[in-house]
Image (cartoon, rainbow, N blue to C red):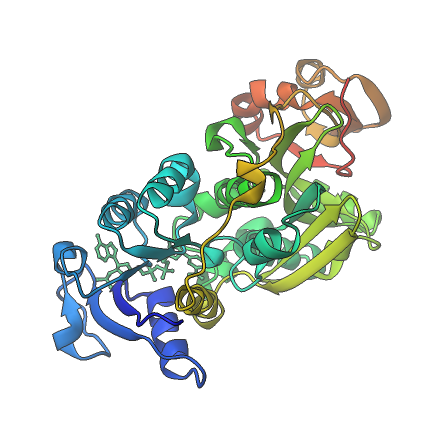
Length: 400
Ligand SMILES: NC(=O)c1ccc[n+]([C@@H]2O[C@H](COP(=O)([O-])OP(=O)(O)OC[C@H]3O[C@@H](n4cnc5c(N)ncnc54)[C@H](OP(=O)(O)O)[C@@H]3O)[C@@H](O)[C@H]2O)c1
């Protein structure tokens, strides 16, 4: 039996307006947005002023409202809103990956205790229905790995640098001019956004709640012209790739690193602001999904899909988390990297186990070889300070 949904919406920016549009133009599904809570009283609005409030308690204390859709750009305030809404027995739909990744364990528990749904398809890879696929289709399959391109801003910048030979600075400016990157792009270009999505996906793919701080993220800010030339000469593309992988000792590793991608990889042709997700199952093999990772309507459509699912009482079952999940998280794994360095001391710091290629010239040196991921974690700050670039050469991961 379907439930009448009375929505309290927080945020009427890019995604909030997208949801409003797709909901009003959807032919098969109806739900009422009762109130919209926003922040800035000076902004003019395109909706009935009677619907607008600046006071969050108007929505949170209204018993008629049974669904809170949280689409604001402030993770701390989003956390307060979502926590209160769940505690009051309201279902919640959110797109806020940072808020979810930082508080996943607590919010998961709160939703279970209050017997309400907490849905967040739009938080990971926009319009790609990856969470629903993991929950519903791969719920009984042992997955080996999930990887992909989870961040549209960096993919846009990388596409422009590799395909159109723009410098990193020019590509970033173009991304900002086109609205793909925020004026402060740190979250995207340093790999935090991709990491938050990886934390969310890890719960549904492997049943494990990772601590975001444990997961290494190295972004694309140190990418230099020499690295771009190297990739072009080898006919590689560079993509920022989160990798979440189950290891033979039944632990899970996860990290975010730039990666050289060969033409045979499904991610090779995922360009511009698009996202792509590869899932590797023990029995199903490799599956690939591609779609728009951001944007008003694609993200609004993902939010609408969650709202629509609420109308038939849908909840994530978290089967893998509740039944059997890996014994823990580890960063003690061996990966193959390309490392552009300045002094031989830099190479010593990364403790290469095995070197397959070296290059030295007056202004540019690199080494390719195997290292332990923990060496990157220990030296992350140093690499950034010295502007050294590191990229995964492939995502084959070994353990000692
Ligand atoms: N943009 C995308 O393509 C995309 C894709 C996937 C996920 N997301 C996630 O979706 C969320 C929203 O992103 P967005 O791009 O739509 O942001 P946005 O365009 O910057 O809009 C943010 C909205 O939040 C409102 N707001 C901020 N603080 C508030 C508060 N304390 N109380 C009430 N309203 C508040 C703002 O109010 P005013 O209108 O008054 O300023 C504005 O309407 C974020 O978590 C983002 O990470 C975005």
